[in-house]
Length: 122
Image (tube, rainbow, N blue to C red; front, side):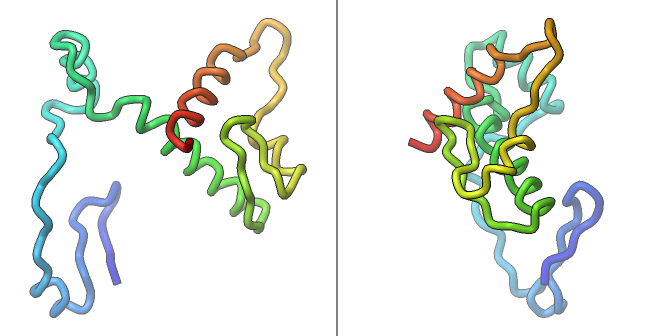
């Protein structure tokens, strides 16, 4: 069993014997220094990719939100990222994308996320 504190800090394996025998994997990803906001600002200044770039975080967020929809509907859903539609449960689509009031449309943002999803999942 894995337990942890708030925000995933202080992870522990139970029983304690598993924790004592655990070997941490080697660090392969660059570590963010000064928080994600500082990392983003540094990426702008030096032209390097930020640790939390949108090519990664956009599709990851999309999957997490789809998991929330599946839990709320208590059903397995099948999703087409290219069309941003749940294909096996049409009622779920009203939770994927909502209608905005006139003047508050987010078509450009939705198209951008859809494009990121297509690049990631294809």
